[in-house]
Amino acid sequence: MTQADPAITEIAPSALRLGLVGYGRMGRIVHRLAEERGHRVTAIVDPHAPEATASALGSDLLEQVDAVIDFSVPATAQEHLLFYGRTGLPAVVGTTGWYDDLPAIQAELQGTGAAIVWSGNFSIGVRLFSRLAAHAAGLFAPFTQYDALLHEFHHAGKADSPSGTALELAQAVQSEWARQSEVQTARLDRVRRPEELHLSSTRGGAIPGTHMVIFDSPADTVELIHRARTREGFAAGAVQSAEWVVGRRGFFTLEQLLDDVFSDSASHSPKLKPTPDTRARKR
Image (cartoon, rainbow, N blue to C red; front, top):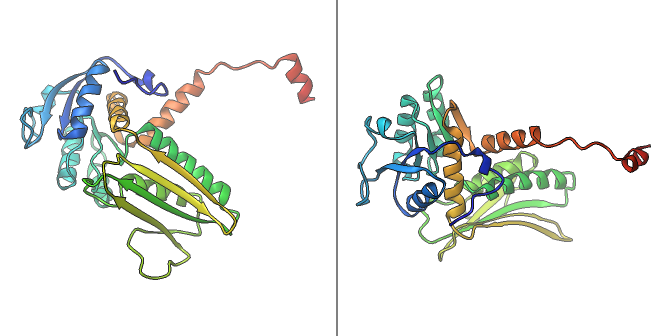
């Protein structure tokens, strides 16, 4: 049995009735992990899977589930998000490739009962890696001899490039790295401009996902690397996000879930009283 990430195990509420929208490799892994955490999968929406209980979203889904986890396709992402938001159905959306539509979707759902968590990557490790990348960028930023760049690897069957995770990592770096303010994802047949942050991609093999953030100078290179070993980390984070979002209202990212977890952890941490030796050192 796959063990839950101990950092967010305490989120889990009582058992949920979950709907899975999209039943490919990720949907099947989510199904298994959800049941291992005590939930029931009561609906599967997929136009092709023989296990599906429906081929498309419909109002009957609202009576069948407490929340849905959506790993479907970019072409239907906007339609699905609007359905979840307008009906108030709690949803976790791991589908990528739709982020250009994000501002319009958020504007459309403003003031509704939407309860949606979205992310380009539901791996808790990746989310923490993103925070590390931003912190590292802040450390290197004062030293102008350093240049920043990113590269990502994924399996040959991945349908988008660059990955949503890589784009989010680029934004994390830029939050502390003003001098490369423009993300460039295209092949460069020219000299890269100083203000461009180059993000490159490789597709091949069966790689679940590898992301690199690099700070390079004439004297040395510093590389931060996250390697996913399996897709189970993505699936576990999605299930835990469904547990968290039920009972909330808003349009959330996985970062907000982590903020909530860290805040709760800090509030329950015991306050250590200084020892006599500690007091002496403070003098």
